[in-house]
Amino acid sequence: MKKIYLDNSATTSMNNEVKNEMDKCISKVYGNPGSFHREGLIAKNAVADSRERVSKIIGSKSSEIVFTSGGTESINLAIKGRAFAMQGKKKHIITSTIEHPAVLETCRYLEKKGFEVSYISPDKDGLIDVNEVEKSIREDTFLVSIIYANNEIGVIQDINKLSKICNAKNITFHTDACQAAGYLDIDVKNLGVDMMTLNGSKIYGPKGVGLLYVKTGTLIEPLFHGGGQEMNKRAGTENVPGIMGFAKALEIVVDEREIEVERLTILRDKLIEGIIKKIPKTKLNGHAKKRLPNNVNVSFLDVEGEAILLYLDSKGVYASSGSACTSSTLDPSHVILAMGIPYEYAHGSIRFSLGKDTTAEDIDYVLEILPEIVENLRNISPFNVDEKKLEVKNE
Amino acid sequence: MSKSLKVLKDKSCSEISDKGDGFSHDGNSWFYTDKVKEHFFHPVNIFRTTEEAKEFEKIADGVGMVGSPACGDGMKMFIMVDQKNDRLKEVKWQTYGCGTAIASTSAFSVMLTKKGGMKIDDALKITPKEIADYIGGIPPRKFHCSVLADKAFREAVNDYFRKTGQLERIKGEKVEVIDNVLKITTADIEHAVLEGAVDFEAVQRKTKVGIHDKNCIPKVKELIEKYKEKYYGDE
Image (tube, rainbow over all chains, first blue to last red; front, side):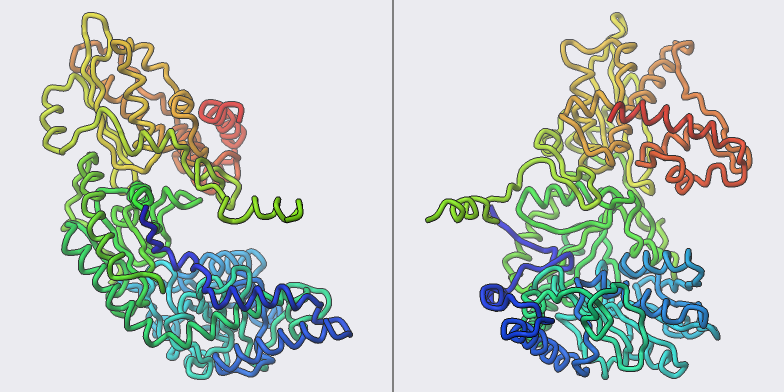
């Protein structure tokens, strides 16, 4: 059976070169980087070398890189770590309603602890209005956290403008760049960010490893206390093979970025255009151009997303849905709803996220099977929603 | 090859199963059993086109519909009744729903019509849990999807009773206001439990029950236990 993996925003497969690098490391480097002997030194050098390579890619000092267990931990460290450092001084955070749950849930947790959070909604295309962020800034605002490129709809925010506003008012700016890493500029100087989250599992690297860039002078409280690793910002013996694999993976995606962006943009647009043309009552979610080259997120009226996923799965196509039935809360995607898109569309949303192995033939195959799947499900549906009567509310 | 190495090799990643029931990160069963999938991919008693459904609606003895496109699920059921014997001759359906809704409704329609059709009174006694058991179980968190079929069926039967003048047989759901401030009803609590809120805190998060009307809290807790028992049994 065919196997077409179009869920690269959930996680990517591992690049063979990365695997080889990690295999080498696992069999040769086993010491604890904190040990005072030759094996320890080898491990310490391995981590230092990775830190150096990663810092070169993002344009930072190596002392500004904190290796973590992945995107969620980096985000927690950035937001909670910064909040705890500011406790008793300032208490206001600004973020958006289309963040990854790692940001939203961390902010909700901090609200319970006495912090105050403003959540900015995007427009109907998923774009955050920079002016609105600026208007929300208060005397006691100390942190703004906005996702660089959204994980569900792939919409890219103007990080540079956002960081400029924050820098001018001495507010720390953090961005979650997990989805952006393979496709966009992640140079921290160009972006002007104070903190940035990256992880390995979205860039053909290992799962369970990520980093937080913390600009010198940005104070954060550690979340893990122990042996003082990672410049006292994250205790715990380093995940040496993971860190080495992560550095290698980041080097490869950045190296191949330009070619991949060009190649995937063509495939993305082919898929979007094909779906809209072949299947009636369909809508693209998120801005058509200001989106990641690998993200296609479309809604089909009168069909439920999970049912589409099951059919796709049976034909060897793996995607994901913002349908209520595939979420653990049984609520449809908060990102799609935040754009003011009606529930009728949210329940029938499907995300195809392309990757390095996606070919034009794969896209052709999806375009060949998808219309029939949607048609079959519409045939057994008692509804026939008039799309002209559905309004997108955020203007 | 040494023994320990062989064991390792046997358990390599390539041997990880892609079959059957799985569990999501929150520990709840997530993927469907092969039995559910079979009903999903090959549903029975459905219409092949919307025109076919429209034609059938004209001749059906009873039609019932619940849900809406905004809710994310909807179900329409059509019944034909052998009036002399008070048995179900045909049960057809349409659904806008997920895998569970489609599979459980398909299975339910088979249960109702096999062996010459069920007596209406017996059919009304079937619980959502029995439907779930019939298809080998469904993930607990998807339970509310399977209840749609049951509700639409009851609506269809009531419609039949109305059309044939058997008004005394119509059973409405007894809905009672529990929270007098927010006018939250027993049906709202039932709905919340079906959506997986199985303790008071979770039900309150979903419905806001008991925030202003604190007197209703003990009664709500009782109801939650009742609906838990009804839908989830001893699990």
